[in-house]
Image 1 (tube, rainbow, N blue to C red):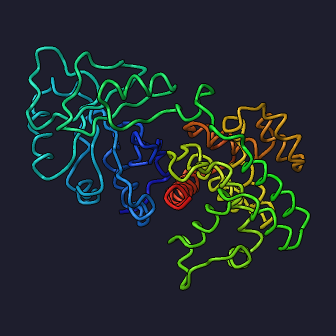
Image 2 (image 1 turned 60 degrees about the horizontal axis):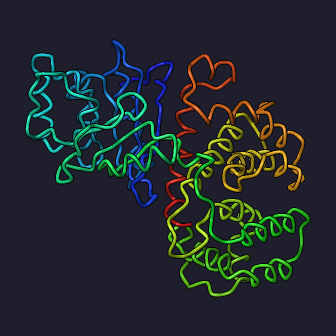
Amino acid sequence: MAELDPFPLVAIDPVANGQNEWVALCLRIQPGANLAQELQAVFGTPDLLAAIAPLDGLLMLDHPAALTPPVLALTPANRIGFVVAASTLAEDGVARRLTELHELGYRLWLDGTPPAGVAVPPALRTIARDYRRDGLPPARPAALFGPHMVRGVDSVKAFADSEMAGFDWFSGDYPCDPAAAGDTNDGTSRRRILTLLGLLSRDADSRELELQLKQDPALSYHLLKLVNSAAFAVSTQITSFNQAISLLGRRQLQRWLQLLLYARQHADGLPNLLLPLAARRGAQLEALCKESGGDRDACDLAFMAGVFSLLDRLLHMPMADIVADLHLPEHVSSALLARSGQLGAWLRLTEAHPSRADLEAAGIAPADWWNSQLNAYHWAIQVGRNV
């Protein structure tokens, strides 16, 4: 099938479990007369399922009519589930169609409260709710039919309420809530990482870097774990910091140190959900910079801006104070402080679901935006599993 022009816009939102691990990505295309054709264009992307592996893809739908045979041929039941508006059960044939999809092996979530007086088929017991729109149901959903999902979870309180109400999967801005608890330690590892980033920026020799690493057991653990992970596929185990620095190279070491700012501070602690969010922003800004013709140094700075854009939430400090301490290039500082300049405009786009008008104003083609999303989420998924 020929690619639609322009390519459909896909809003993507990560979904996490109660252990702060990404488990799925919600995908939504604005409904319209050509939705089935647009779904074919999106799911016909050769790299889509590989990019989001091993996560589930959850397709948000206002109505199941768009799930035509050509669409189903591109959405394998073991990888893609459907979140369908519960209100459609009032229409003739919808309950039967959803039951058929369930019998074909598809996982289905009824989104919202079913219409009064409408019987819900026994097979459709897994529910989804929008915390902002629907609130939480009065009765606890049956755990047997989970995982039940709640969206619009934008605060720590909303997360706690949803978890207590029996939901298993959560999507929203709650990782960025300023009320989120900080680490129980004194932040020594993060201060040492900032010191290391300063040493790298002035091209310090490897012995100085190694000395800093040796002073921090937590940072040492994360670095050695990283270079021995599947992300690097080394044939022999790396056991020394000098080996690690040599394997990574100074440019990659700088990137991973930026991400390690967000790593859990204790081996037995929960992952930090800001980590994959920061990784996704960094990778997407880098992809947009590369697409616009930026050179290697410009792409490195774009990546840095994306990763650093959540440091105020991580460190519970004003961004102005953080930028002052890091001595960043002017255009990176302006992007972080005021979302100004081209870099700031790209960063602003990664913080929301842009419209076609937003992309046009930024000079980004919808197909390029889609490719930058896939690249970014693939990178963020790998980072979340290896750091």
